[in-house]
Length: 369
Ligand SMILES: Cc1ncc(COP(=O)(O)O)c(C=O)c1O
Image 1 (cartoon, rainbow, N blue to C red):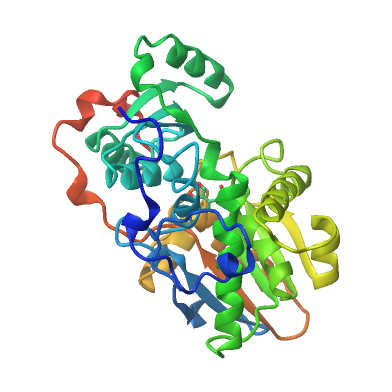
Image 2: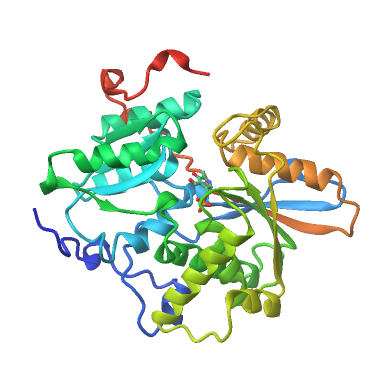
């Protein structure tokens, strides 16, 4: 097994000419061309209110393998040390985590696999399907019943007697500083679309947050692109897991990595955002009973979106649309433009599910919700 640089980034195709971020970096890290960007922006009149005109950034269409936001992070992370090898990747998440699913699907294209330290979450049909795909594609799990018990999964993994195939650890949600680069680039992409007249400059952006790489990357990107905007961050997790301190830390880490890569931007993240007119708030009102627990407002959002050929899932994007509908219904301000950043993949993964996957399920399958 080759542990170093098994994947020449040039093999993934020519470097994307449209990466505005790479062009700004003297020492740009490598990047695999995994995402199909720019993703479209389109009007969503079905979400309009008397004061708000709503657009959608269709990142659900960002890849024929697995769209959504994760591919934007992985194309940077998987191209660079310590992940540019033949080894498995070790990462953490719920048993139906989209981050783990994205990793499984992109590692598979490189002949690699995922080792997941996972916790049991509400077994919605969506979670069950994600788990079925991951198991069918060869992922291995060390599962525990709750998030609090994850250290036990970590211990079990380290006691596992296969040092030759131990995975390289990756932070939850791929929200590493390099992972954030993907969303800095995504903000530049949106700024270019605004400039090209494809949509008016959004006054408010709704995007959902978990491990915060998406939010931190976008906030820095908007600031660097000089695009003032208010970010309504809809948390899918409880305040102990995502909060303003976490957001600052993520931005600080990403900014420092950007500087190491040659970005010329003075000051800290806070000053950068302030000077550019980029603001954010964190909305916990849709978390409901907790991470991964569906809510009635989320279910209503899924139904409404389905009528308009938009596929949401209950953990993140449904709660984000629920927040948008709630907050915009009460907004009595001036007419404004709103953007919903769609971060969930639209791909139908059913053909990947192998019969008999249930036998390898690390959780009992009788408790579906
Ligand atoms: C569909 C979806 N949207 C949004 C997010 C949140 O992204 P981040 O973890 O970067 O905050 C996730 C994270 O797993 C996700 O799966």
